[in-house]
Image (cartoon, rainbow, N blue to C red):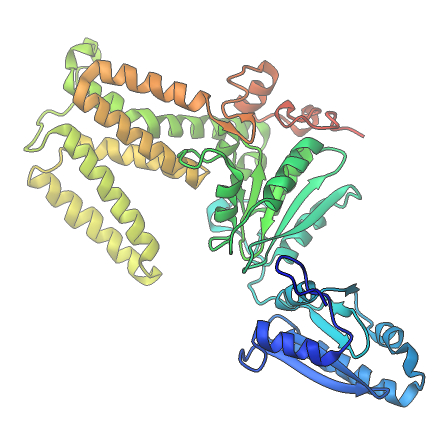
Amino acid sequence: MQTDKGKKKSISPHIEDTYAYMKKRVGLEESYDLGYRETVVLNQRIQMYYVNGLTDTSVVQEILKVMVEVNDNESESGKIGEIIENRLVHQQVEHVTTMDEAVDEVLSGLIAVFIDGKDYAQIIDVRNYPGRTPEEPDTEKVIRGSRDGYTENIVENTALTRRRLRDEKLRNVMLKVGERSKTDVCLTYIEDVANPNLVRYLKDLVEKIEVDGLSMSDKSLEEFLLVKKWNIYPLVRYTERPDVATSHLLEGHVIIFVDTSPSAIIVPTTFFHHMQHAEEYRQVPAIGTCIRFIRFLAVLAALFLLPTWLLFAVEPSLLPEKLSFIGPNDEGNVPITVQIIIAAIGIEFLRMAAIHTPTPLSTAMGLIAAVLIGEIAIEVGLFSPEVILYISTSAIGNYVTPSYELSVANKVITIILVLAVGLFGLPGYMIGITLYILFIVQIRSLRTPYMWPLLPFNLKAMTHIILRMPVPYTKHRPSIVHPRNNYRRP
């Protein structure tokens, strides 16, 4: 038996050693959820370990019943290992030869069967993770379309994807991350479409992660995969819709599932991937294009409306005569820049309060915010009406943004631009926007230019970004993922 530090401990043929190991290392008889049962089959001791709550109890009872019946139907004890394995009529039964593997499998919801005199364990996959049924994600609703969504069960998530993509080249590669959590991480891709260098690179990154556990599941994993840890812009895309994930798989992307998370991670992604929404593809191409234009306009308003209006408010000489009405008629008692900052922080207060407020009380909270706080703040001179108008328009633009992570990043940029304009006027506006453009064009997501296909410019791809093209016209996969098979027709 290997006991040196850093080496995996092999399974002892003496079953007493197995029991002692499970008692010392895993907490047998101390942890109530760790199940254990010993039986005697053909005069040999057999031990079975499992976790209550992760294993179907009826299956445990069925296995015990089958083992007991062996005593009535068999007599050759020399082949007890083969006899037991042949009686385990389950989808997956495999052998492991180390205690580390056996313990990992038991704590993942599988059953481990140890036989006295054998230096291996039989692992039976009968996982039954607790969780909810697939339902439509709240953040990616569509008027027409499927109503199922990913759940916290990684097995269900890969099955939902497989249901939509019945390709023999679809690969689901399962890895484990976390010295203590042993979190399941699945890399999903189409073997003859996805770039093999990308798949290999992602697999190496995941395997090199050294941490005790992924406390925030997919978000913790993302921070290990990305180089620029302090970048505010999202470098991966999250989705809870199987149809969206399948669409990206067909383009050549890689999907990463993390157990206990209902979100799938799409890599690599660009800025414009975060601007897409399933609703565009559930409408006819012309209507989908109009929806896309409106969404682009809303995001631009969320980013630049406040600093641009503030610039015209503090320097009205820049306005043409026909637009001289822009700007507050009465500045009030508080500088306009401070009003905008306070109002932006106030909206964040409301957003966080809405998250933490129980649903029956959210309506009352909205009334308090709109009627009491908003109206009274204008009457006492804290805010001017135009500040409320433009801050509300900017907030709506952020809510229109499909990616929550992108909307939060845009809020930060907007506040920075507002401060630049408030402190330095027109020079602050020009320098701020210039620095913003330089910042965003140098971002790379897993070696992918973030602003592609705008920079570097690709006319054909940019046309597909601006227009929602009919499906029969989308014959080629995006070149940014470097697919092995670029043509989308058989």
